[in-house]
Amino acid sequence: MATLADALNFVIHHRPGLSDRELSVALYGSPSYERPVQAECQLLMAGGQVHCRVRPDGNHAYYGGIAAPAELGR
Image (tube, rainbow, N blue to C red):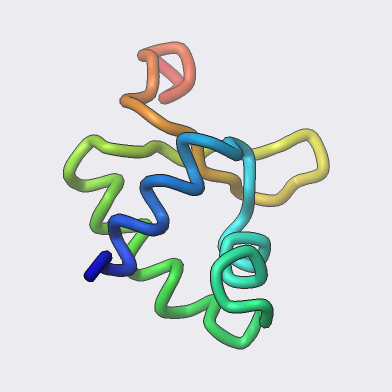
C-alpha cells in the first residue's frame, strides 16, 4: 500500500507548483488535511526529493528534485 509520502511525491512530480492546501485537495478532496500534508512535505524536502519556493501569487509551492542554488538565494 502506498504511503502519504509516496502519493505526495507522485503528485508533486506530475503536477509541480501545488501548495499544501492544493495537495490536500488533490489527495483527499478536502483542504482539512493540509497540516499532515505539510508535515510530510517537510520530510520529503529534508530527504531532497522535493523543494519548496514561493509562487508569484505569494503561496509556497512544491516542485520535484533539489532546488538550484539560485532558488535558495545563494
